Image (cartoon, rainbow, N blue to C red):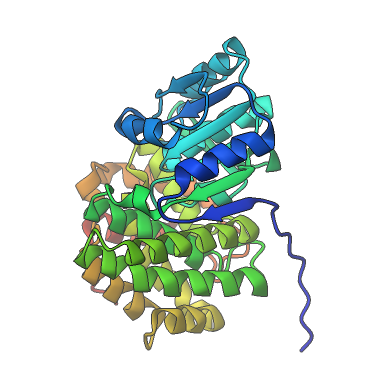
Amino acid sequence: MSMVFDHVTLGQRVLFGSGRAADNLAAEVDRLGAERVMVIAGRSELTVAQKITRKIDVAIYHDDVAPHVPIANADRARAVTTEHRIDLLVCIGGGSTTGLAKAVALTTGLPIVAIPTTYAGSEATNVWGITESARKTTGVDNSVLPETVIYDATLTLSLPVNLSAASGLNAVAHCIDSMWAPRADPINRALAGEGIRSLAAGLPVVKNDPNDLAGREQALYGAYLSAVAFASAGSGLHHKVCHVLGGAYNLPHAETHATVLPYVLAFNAPAAPEAESRIAVAFGSTTAISGLNTLRDTLNAPRALKDYDLHEDSIPEAVALILPVVPDSNPRPVNAADLEELLRAAYTGDTSAW
């Protein structure tokens, strides 16, 4: 059988090196010729941000960051860039911080240098998301793709083990969705497989010894690969489910992905034997779901959506919101009953079907 596909590789510079964030940022600001830099970092990241930016001139630090990028926060940040004549955005933090920078870039066209402190992966995608009236809208636009990503595993050392696990499983979700998303192809499947392998190797090391830098580097490398694969393949069923849940019910991003992932994988795997086999091999397991669940058990991963304040009576509404956005490429047809069964199992943490 001949191989036919259409693959787009996004253009982005990646600088990877533990302990090198400040030097790499200074070099990038100089290379880009930026004179008015706005640093976006949440309050909890401010001390780290000031350390990383000590070698550059900063016009303003902006800490008005919130999960799922509420439109009001995006509007305020855009206004700040105009007021201070900003010519470069530097975002330091997790997915919410990167997401705010992207929301600003979407309308201003300002370049971004992203310095992630989690395994969220948003820094390597051209996907943006904004929440308005409890509904999260996402889109794809190359203007939001960071010009440069600076990876420094020392910046993840302060990330607690439980958040490291959830964030890392969010990256695994990028990989698994990339196996059957709308634009899945052999290249991003290969990247996704290597991403799973690296994350499955690194995250247990982080769990066992949070200060093990080699484990953190493996996880960060895997997270990058997961995001590159996801940016190419697009958003599959898992991400459609989680984007609705996060935007409509204000559920925590990483924990929601970590909780929902095994249920989507268990639903899709029987209808996608080649993808299932790739995932299993990447985990070093006999089946994809057993490999994922072994990793989840090792990490003591989040188990049930009810633990994150989702109300059971919201499930029918969530089903109605998710069903219209299910990708046609999903390996199995999806109906309302399927979604309700999946969400109710994820709500309670019921794994009896496995």
